[in-house]
Every structure is written in structure tokens, then in C-alpha cells.
Image 1 (cartoon, rainbow over the protein chains, first blue to last red):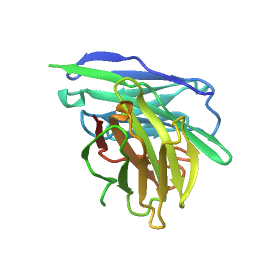
Image 2 (image 1 turned 90 degrees about the horizontal axis):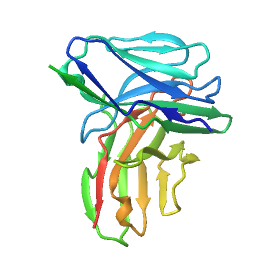
Image 3 (image 1 turned 180 degrees about the vertical axis):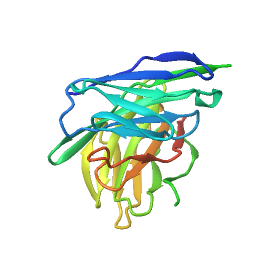
Length: 112
Length: 116
């Protein structure tokens, strides 16, 4: 069964690039990796989703190596408002069912 | 376009009671999934419904149940509440089976349940 592992916490400073890695073993070919951001007392907010190689949108990039055993969320030039918990989500897909597995979350603190 | 709506946002129940939480998905989304979030256990998958059928279920006791209506709205029920059921319950929706083939899952703000 797949399991996801993320660092518990990270610290950064305004303007720096932050990379958060999620390790996920045993994900199948059709499985996607999704990253969410969560602020206190709010539901997780979608950041980015990918299947392989690299995906980029207006707020982040997602790097997935060829072996797909990990993925890295890259946040360029973070600001104080990026202080939040970041979760990776792996969807295990098999014919007839879908099981969603979250990482434990990485608490990112951005300092002035 | 309205997001995922959950009601109620906050509620307090007594041990042994039951509770029903409601979720309205994003318009056009047919899949609804539920999650429990606690400080100690993180985000845990409860179950997913698609077209009124439960597609998958997480590792929770039978006290946790759900259903989906023909309009894709969903309810989650917890019977015989225990203190350990105190948590944030999150509902999420997606167009198709969540997480697969790029079907992005969007979350609501959650329902805070406190069991006393």
C-alpha cells in the first residue's frame, strides 16, 4: 500500500524559493499527485496537480522524477502569506476503486 | 461559481448522540468525498460517493456512514458519538473520481464537531 512522507516543518524567509518534497512509494502508473495549502480553520486549497515531469501554474511548480517515487512542490519567492500547512495527496487508482492518501503535512513558516 | 458548501460550520454534541453533516458540491461535480482531520491523525479519507453509489471507504468504524442524493448533494452521519470523534470534517467534490485522470478535488471549509 502506498504511503506518503513529507517533512514536518520548514522555515524560510520572504523572497526565497521553497521546495517541499513528498515521498510516495508504490503509486501506480495512473496515479496523480496533488498539492494543497491549508490555513487554520479553513479547508485545504488546491495548488497544483501533476502526473509526470514538470507542471507549472501561476503560483507554483511541481516536479515529478521519472521513477515517480517522489514529487517536489516549488514555491517561488514566498511571502508571509504563504505561511501555512502544505499537503501532498496521492490517488491510488485501480479499476473499480479509488483510495486517497494524504501526507501528514508540512508546516511552512515564512519569516520577514 | 460557488465552491463546496458545508453545513453546519460548528456544532457541539454530547457523547452517545448522533450527528448529520451536509455537503453541497460544486455545480456539475458528481463525486463527493469526506475526510476527518484531527491534530493527531491528520487528514484521513472516510468515503467517496459517485452518482449516489459509495465507491470507496476508508478505515473507519460502521458508526460513520454517508449517502449521496440524485442532485449530488451528500450527507455524512456519525452515530453513537465518542469524544474521539471531535474533529474537522471536510467534504470535497470533483467532476469525476477524485484524483484520477486529473479530476481535481476541491474542498469545503469544513464542519467543526466537538463532542463533550
